[in-house]
Image 1 (spheres, rainbow, N blue to C red):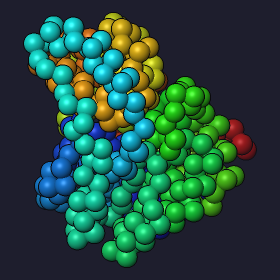
Image 2: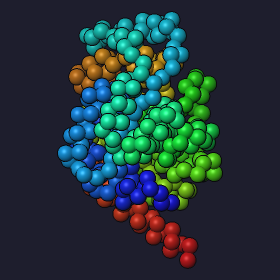
Image 3: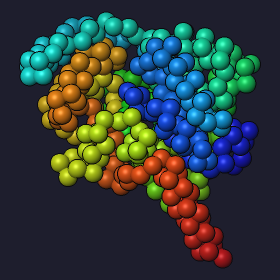
Image 4: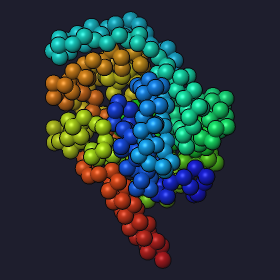
Length: 356
């Protein structure tokens, strides 16, 4: 399915925005130059930090790119539950010789300031995570020529994205690494998401806007499958995490194929919101007790995660990864796009041959 949005990039391959310093300008530029759509992640950055990365990316490529923004999170956390979790993490702080972070460090991730930057310095594509932007926000971005996407994990959420006037919906399957883009974050919804192929099919029947499929995709054959199911493009995150240009910590890259880390799990242990990561000691010990309290828990554990990385201890790091992590390939990002495109073409040819 072609649209004005997907006509921006020659190949139906989108590099997922991975917050925390992974989706750096060099990675996004390499993907764009190879024919995909590269993304910057504005999450956990200041508005000026986002702006500086946009300027750097523009110096590296003249091709269209995207910027992902976290929507402000409603204050639903129980302070008492956060305090209990902080007491539980006291031993971690002692072990890593650091202090716990302040859970009251802010809720909106500088959302309004980032919108000002994106309005005054328009970028080709902006995507939103953790909900649906107001129609006024979408209209503001449209007026400056920006395409708007938002993540959804159910057909109902996809309809909300369409009603807001977005140009496309990112259908995120339960297989996806990192934070789930659920619009309603409650303990009752933990682990109840749809698999990607089922989600894409249902979302295609629910909305008329283009669908970008995301979740566990690592090979061109999988991209062919989601395109056949009705997606306009495929978004890959974990596949790009170990590339040379990725800003991921070396221990994070190595962990994807390290036999010590054999599976992933959705957890609130590191941030208070469901996110899929490799099962390590921290996740096993604290995941069952972490409250539904984002971004309070994120702020609380940030110094622990930083100290664990500095100490070279992956057992205390948030090792975000999708279910296909064992299929990770280390190579330059541009080369990975070329490989994926070749695999996609081969898979499509095989499907066409079988249909004759």
